[in-house]
Figure (cartoon, rainbow over the protein chains, first blue to last red):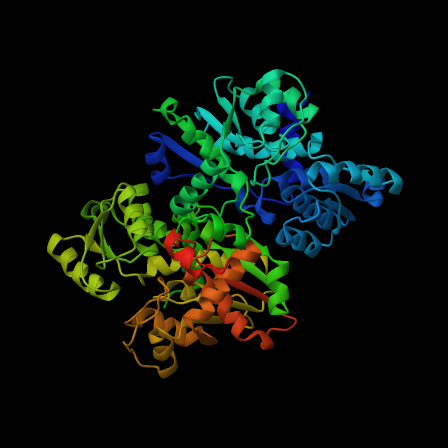
Length: 315
Length: 315
């Protein structure tokens, strides 16, 4: 299993291309939660999401021969942008499968960074299974969203949190495939075992949460409209880490995530995508347990389209 | 007149409290302008705007006796937040006058940081004249939005731009009272006199632009709805610097600023306020002169209310 030293090693790769992101305290959010709240601004990364840390670490870890073969992956959004960004930075060709009907703004961004984008299937998991076969045919390197190098790369944000706020009590993390929450767990629990790490998913896509609770690897219903945490099939590698370390795993409705999104825009004046608001929605749902604590919520990304934004905004 | 060395000296104060902001290249914006575009993300600062650099530098420059007397200033928004933030960081009392009907979210943020907020007059200039008298009565220190320490503090963002992109050709800067554009001019023109610095204001509030063009200190109509560049009375100290250094000063309509704001949200996924979109609106208005160049636009801040945002967003 990955260790905190693996994540420390990734810092060398990550900081050659990226800078630490801010951890800001917000009075307005603290009043809403009745406790002290900091936001980790992964939405400030290039490509607007934490995943880019993983993409950079993965690309930096490839052999020259692997770089020549090119990267293949599937993504409805931020993971694809991250791989496209890192591939461009390292001069690697990237082929990214997206579901039919994928967010056109996100597709344009991946193409703009030089990636080849291929449409296949109805959802992320269909596109992923298909492009994994394609990578084999083409002798390319398939990248799963839970590859070790990705977890180690994204875990560097947790090292930044612990350095700036070593007496944090609870960290709330949105869970999609689980790379972010695993990186956070490995860092936090091996720094101070009293720190609680809490995953958050939508009640409308609870596969990762149910798998974690039951100890079995499940697939299931996926009806959330919140991209980035819309996981239909649980991932074994991240479940294993979560079972060892994760303290709690909350489910919150899509509706409460969009309410949290509005509150975050109002109080932080940052653009935030649904997944980026899930952690704060989770904290709001257990507000009464947080008194007198220092809480960090991960704003994992800001990649929301103007159309989505205007339909979600209360105004 | 202030020199680039004064701004370099301010870096010591600024970086004790703040971190450099990102300068990101955007493919989508570059396609729109037909040239290479970078955005300087001052919206990533605490309090969401570039002004906080000035507030920190000013507070750090006070004598102990001045700190005890407290700071008095007027602001409809970001300047007030900046002074409130810096005052809290240095344990100084802050009294901030705002016009009647000031943005309630911004007022709440200033109060949340411990500032006393007093309502007076119809616009920024009325509140400013009134609070300057109040500071005299109370033996406090009045802060004008164009004080030297503020210009030097905010000028540090220009040092960051020149360090990261020394071959920049043109920098577009929104102009309110002028501290940002003056800091940018002093840094850019004393580093490489070939770099062009271009101010941008709204046609609905052109006082600073007309004063710069005419060489006289004017006051005049102010009908823009774009906070942060809504200046009715020109400032002598910043006009003097602008007359020496500024290469051009564009006027763009409120409507084109809101169009630019939508494009920036779409292509950068950052929340941006009207003033923060003015620089890009200015660049768009002279698109045909920018071919083959490296352009930086200052995203000066992101402090827009959810109500404003939903009314401006095209969706």
